[in-house]
Image 1 (cartoon, rainbow over the protein chains, first blue to last red):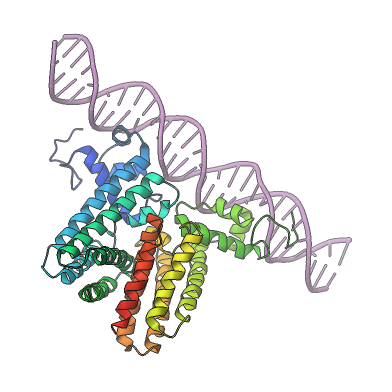
Image 2: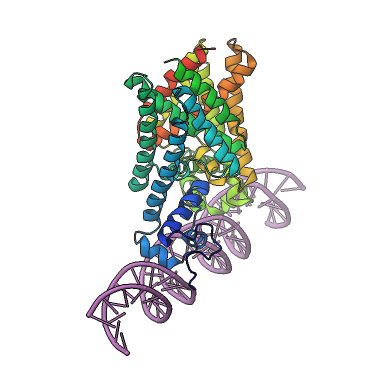
Length: 200
Length: 200
DNA sequence: TAGTGGATAGAGCGCTCGTTCTACTGCTGC
DNA sequence: GCAGCAGTAGAACGAGCGCTCTATCCACTA
């Protein structure tokens, strides 16, 4: 079947097959982790077949997972950048990130959270490739926040430490939001993080 | 084989079979999540057999998982209580919790983290029983911190919100610690949380 | 028209999973 | 002595997993 690119039941069918597979994998792994996500389900969600999956990812599920983590990480980077660039006040900018996350979560029924958390927790100490990909993602986000805070005049060392806590708090608050199906933890975190940053 | 209670290759063989099974399940699920943890592996680690597992948990893996979550949650409650009661200064007490977590993590090679995070993330929106058990655990911890802060003279409403952020930050920092195999995020979180609390 | 190779397609392999089932052991009350 | 029962033991089942394999389709080149 061949479906010209614009005809399909899948929302992003216009993208090429490889991209659709990565997107589907990223979404599923973000929502339920690595082990609970089957390759056949990924292929079905992507509107692709098993043959295509193994054609593009001969390394199998793990290779696909690493790619999916990178893809999701980039999406979250974009969200952070949007929040951080939303205003001149660095405290308010970080708070905006928390609010954006809360909104994304609510809009997806508490499904679309941090793209690496669920998968990373399954693999700590068990898969160097996946742990490294997760570490790179977190490091990249931390750097992004640190640079933004430093640009606002906060001493570089303080900015780096603050960025670490900002990320910790955002990640943890997101977990709490998802488990309790409530925006509250991220809303509260937004206020407290802003207050903490203003103290510098 | 019978093994009088004191003879066995397993560290906690003196406990009864049911307890050993729950402990083994809690440890494995804490380290690698629910899906990656097989029932046969749980039985082997507990020094029990499949028959015993299904004898005590006729509801199967999910019933066992809920019990394991409760068990792990109680252990973490004990850790929090120890930290919170370590000093009169509420800010310092919360910081001590973070330090205790960092130490536990390091001592276990970044394996023994929050007992519910990994499993909870796999099941959000997919299993009411497990999500509820996770929510209860987080709520219990939050309450514990809130009461401690209120007892130190912080207004009740502020204490409740602060407790929420404390938990968010601890959970997130722990994730960062495990992924990066470093105590740094929790050490930094300890300082920042103390500072935030002192502002009230 | 024939040839080439990236991409698609899905049947089927071996394996492991959670679960079920039957048999056995050892204690307790009669 | 033995019935009854909680607990132990592990073989076996069906389902589903990740993955392999062969066949086919379709542009593009010559």
